[in-house]
Image 1: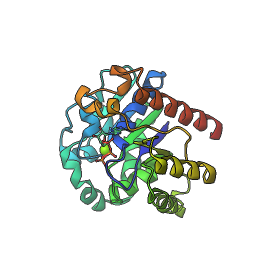
Image 2: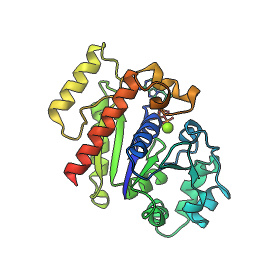
Image 3: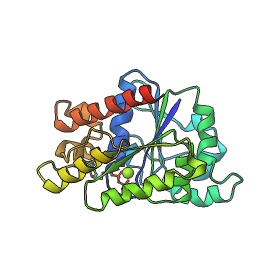
Length: 248
Ligand SMILES: Nc1ncnc2c1ncn2[C@@H]1O[C@H](COP(=O)(O)OP(=O)(O)OP(=O)(O)O)[C@@H](O)[C@H]1O
Ligand SMILES: [Mg+2]
């Protein structure tokens, strides 16, 4: 089982859109896939038309077996562990327990035989829940909007994940919401492609079809499979999958 977290310190950069599309494409390729919506806003659950609600709220998550809270999505091989608005209190719930930074890892344990891939849609920020996610993940995929400050954000995140306790964690970044007509976007991307191996070559364009996922409540592939947005996500999943196989 591989745990892939979609995470950025910043909000509104495309974490949820990417988590939903990549988890869908992963499931469609035949892998048993779970998407865990760990953002109390519940946007990933909304996109998969599943009520963002857990029996027993945040405590229920810790006290019941997570497998019992999993819901089937409309798609083969794709399950969802829904969000719950009560998950906004997860920081406090985790903080009160022994092994406060290992709670997500502990919850994932019993799911490892049931899934080939578990995607986590992480909330923004650097909270205790996020630290839990970073400890539990094998791979963090981080969307980055090209801007003058984005390379600085990337340096901060790389420094954070290089801390000794997270040494097994791999971080790959991809550009998101790219407007290829803008010179600045092109320059920032070219510079980082030249300088860094951890930046994926596939980028996700700013595309109204991706934005429409919130209206259609489905992965972009399902309602606009020929669009630039759908094509970009297919290419992104191919690149991630190929790199995972070659990096082991
Ligand atoms: N490539 C894109 N092109 C156009 N719109 C996009 C794209 N990716 C995401 N969006 C839209 O931008 C908004 C933010 O995207 P999303 O929810 O995926 O970001 P996020 O990083 O998960 O945000 P948050 O930090 O609030 O969880 C949403 O309305 C989404 O539909
Ligand atoms: Mg989100």
